[in-house]
Amino acid sequence: MAKSVRKKGNIKVSKVLSSPFNIYWSKTNYIVLALGLLSAILGYYFLSVKPWNSSVSLYLAPVILVLVYIVFFPLSILIKKKEPTEQESK
Image (cartoon, rainbow, N blue to C red; front, top):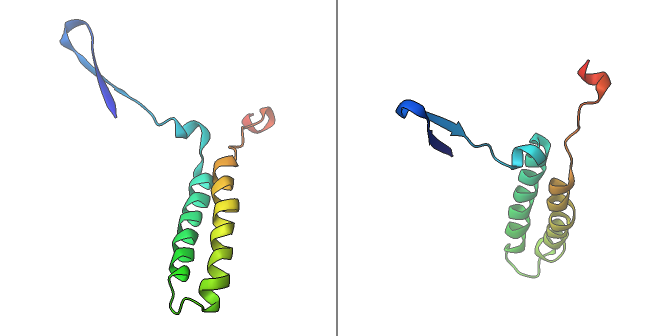
């Protein structure tokens, strides 16, 4: 989203606003979140498999969904970016 700012002489300068997630989220966060979303979709699909009393819908789907909600989603939020140390920046 860009915001126009007027300056002297009616010259328009566009200012680019960056996302606040760029500071906190890296590529690995998005990958873990995508894996979590795909796993959640897979878990809900397995939950809908008929017959309702099959081993896939009674045992496998809940295990997948618990892993998604307890491991993948919090992990995607809690992974931190590695800050370059002084030795790496030289």
